Figure 1: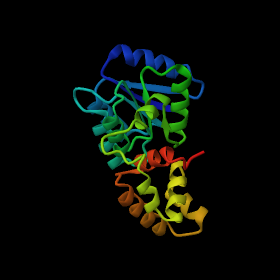
Figure 2: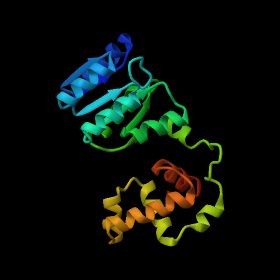
Figure 3: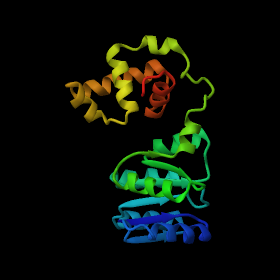
Length: 211
C-alpha cells in the first residue's frame, strides 16, 4: 500500500516512516511536514492510507480530514497523535477519520491500526477507548431511564451499531429498508441525547448491551 504520512516534527516523520517502511504490506511512504502541501498531494494522487497528526501550525488534522473527505470521501485516514482528550477524539471521528491511535502506541498496535484502516475498518486504540468510556459531564451512560425509553427494535439497533455494523448491514440483517434504520437511528440519538455513533456505543457498553 501507498501511505501519506503527515506531521510537523521531522524526527517523528523519520521514525514513523522507518516503522511503516518495515511493514511488508507497505510499498511506499510519502512524508509531509506541512499539512497544506500534504492536502494538495492527497487530492492529486491516490494513497491507500493517510496517517496524520492533529495539532499542526498550518492546519489541524481534523481540518485536513474535513477538506479531504469533502473532495475525496473515499479517503482512509488514521489519526496518530498525543491528544487523548474526549473532545478531540470526538471531533476527529466527526470529521471523518476511520482510526485514532496514540503516538505512545507500540509497533504491534500501530500495524494493527494501519492494516485495519487501510482495509476500511474502524480502529480505536485501547488508550483512546479508555478515554471515550470515561463519564463526561451530562453523560447518560448510567441513566437507566434512557434504556427504558427505547423500544425493543431500537435496543436491537443500538447493539448492532455497537458491533460496528453499517446502516446498510443493519437493514439487511433486520430485513428492513435503509431509510427505516436511519429513522430508528435518529430517534435513538434523540432519546439518548447524544450526537453521534460514539455516544450510542458508549451507551451500549455501559448498559451491558455488548458481549
